[in-house]
Length: 156
Image 1: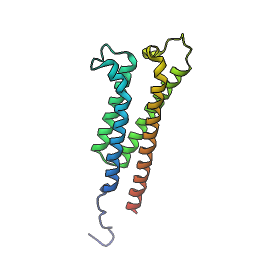
Image 2 (image 1 turned 60 degrees about the vertical axis):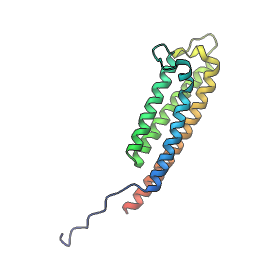
Image 3 (image 1 turned 180 degrees about the vertical axis):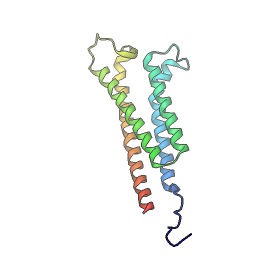
Image 4 (image 1 turned 30 degrees about the horizontal axis):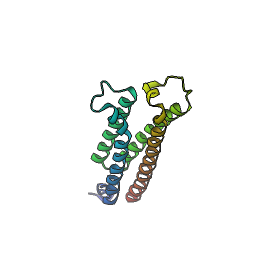
């Protein structure tokens, strides 16, 4: 190494405290995912072929969220937590649409995904899932931002 070359920088390793916080976040978000699909599992059981469209959609969305959570655990970094935040924000938007359709649609108007069959409870359930996904979005965004700031400070 000559005098003009800078010494190599050490490899960045995620802070153990952030990794622990990410695991707790994954556990909490996993609980939200399970909660969001409970009515679908109750109605459909394990047979999605005969399940109403809303139950299939709920299970599909929950499976996507679970896969992203597993990926986040496999790749502990602020960017993977950021992606989880984006996914949960998108799911919150979907449930916001479902909540508004269930609450604002006229009683005689059919709803997509066979939501008309569960119109009375769909608004409340979708609203609860919306609120939990919004909370998960906030927590993931907060952890990701703090982790990114700590990583930037480490590089200085």
